Image 1 (tube, helix red, strand yellow):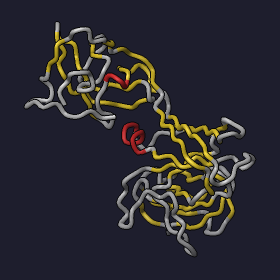
Image 2 (cartoon, helix red, strand yellow):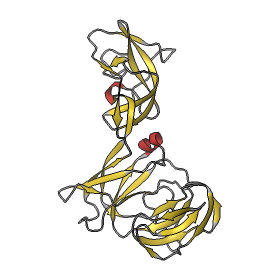
Image 3 (cartoon, one colour):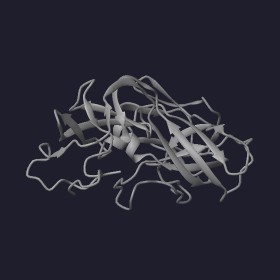
Image 4 (cartoon, helix red, strand yellow):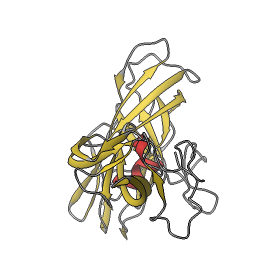
Amino acid sequence: MTACSPQSSSADTTSTASGATSTVEVRKGGITPLVSSSTSVQLASLFALTAPVKGWFHATADQGTYVHAGDQLGVIDNQSVTTPVDGVIESVTQDNDVAEHYPLFSIRYGGMSAEVDATAMLTIIGSDQRLAGRFQITDAQGPTDCAAIVDDGAVMPASSEQDTAGSSAGPQGAESTRTLQCLFPKDVQARPGQNAVVVLTAPTIEDALILPVTAVAGRLGSGQVSKRDGDSFTTVNVKLGASDGTSIIILDGLKEGDTVASTAPNLAPGAQS
């Protein structure tokens, strides 16, 4: 959610009369970043295993091999590259000095999945966080833990066919979204086309400064709040962190105990926009 910009020469000096405006206080607490999506069940598409660090990569598994969850497929800079689920290796990059996040293997998982656009969350928390996920198929069993959360954004083309469904890379490789797959355990009864809800969560961030999301205009990195300043409210720019959909982390611009309007700037009745 974003609000329209104030019609003022300075984004941090707009003031409004306090009147009967309700307020909330900046407080410290824990927050578990998450993204939730209503989506559809599909056949799992190819996913990539990427380089965890920059370094010299050497493959120890071959294209066409059926591998099991936890198997080592290669080594980079003395770190093992393992697969999170069973599957068939569709492609392998040649031994090379590769950059971090470079795709090393494409794996085909023989099960169902659901895709989630996690662009906003990953922009805030970074791509190195280990995510967990649960899904619920409408009118079916669940909720159930995802077998794995895998990235669709860097899949190498298979040697015999083009199968990059769900990849976020465009024709020239320009990435506009970060799509993640929740792979379903194979014992889950699911069919392509069924409706599902998927929730992905990152590790909990403790002792953070937080506000309700309803008090903040903006989401991706920066925003504004109406901070109480005596008998009036001043629009203040803030740096934003992760959100759990209810609360959002304030990284800069406010301190613990500050009071702000419970409604985001320009969303209150009578505010300029």
